Amino acid sequence: MLVKLELPHFTLPSMFAAPTISEEILDLKRQRRAILLAHHYQDPEIQEIADVVGDSLELARKAREYEGDVIAFCGVWFMAETAKVLNPNRIVVAPDRDAGCSLVDSCKAEDVREYRRRNPEHMVVSYINTSVEVKAESDILCTSRNAVRVVNSIPRERTVLFLPDRNLGAWVQRETGRENMKIWQGSCIVHNTFPSRRLLEAKTAYPDALVVAHPECPEAVLRHADFVGSTSAIIEYCATSPAPEFIVMTESGVNYSLERAAPGSRFHYVANENCNCSECPFMRLNTLEKLRDALADLSPRVELSADLMRRALVPLERMLAVG
Image (tube, rainbow, N blue to C red):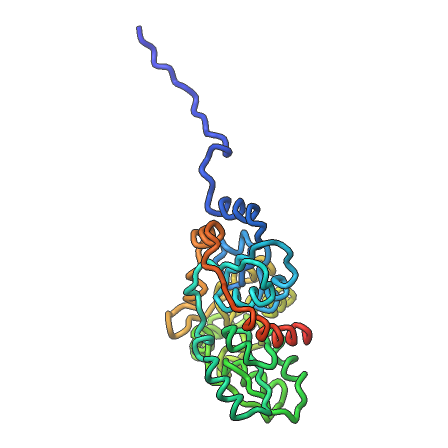
């Protein structure tokens, strides 16, 4: 008589299982002696494996401090360019070369050169959201976190050209009380399209919530904010505030960092007019698959001339010295 034997079910040990994409990335990181830098607006799965998650200023500082061979920058392309300027002898890669920025597109180096030719006595303060070519034409750079401090570091008798974000520039002008300030007319396709009417609707829906806003938002939005600051400043504010909930007027990718910093709080987001969401389409181009391939192939790679890096480093170092 034949007897059917019921064999026990075995699960293969993890050492035989196919590695996940995250595990592949971490293995490649070790092989390449690489560091993974990620902006707060990246998808959670990228932030989860990053060595450092931060805003533009924090990531610039970390890029300067790093001593390995490769920097993989998960953000947008101008951020990877900044890392290369600070690390000219290291390989800098990004997951997607097309991860650009509307602010970069709004301000061309040839236009800045022409402005400088016509106004040689003016000081050019460039937001870090600019191309490396524009940075090289600037006197000093800034981020949203230190923009007020940077502008205040310039003698008040000097006329300042602030570029390229008109909303950040207008906010800095209000905060500094500086009258002799020219402002470029660029804008962020996410922050600039937050409508104040939707913010007011959110305030009605969540009457106990505080409003925190990035200074790239229009003044009509900022006037309703309880706190205005950079991405990291918003996270710090929410983490230390006793308020139970917040309406967050910035890119919704920050939710991952907010929930880690303030796990007991609730966060609400307002859709902008462009996509009926609060996501940056450029930031969302980066994926785990692209990051893995960038580390494997060391491409797309940031390649800049020595002269361009030398000229862009001067205003960048001035910004870092201001703090």
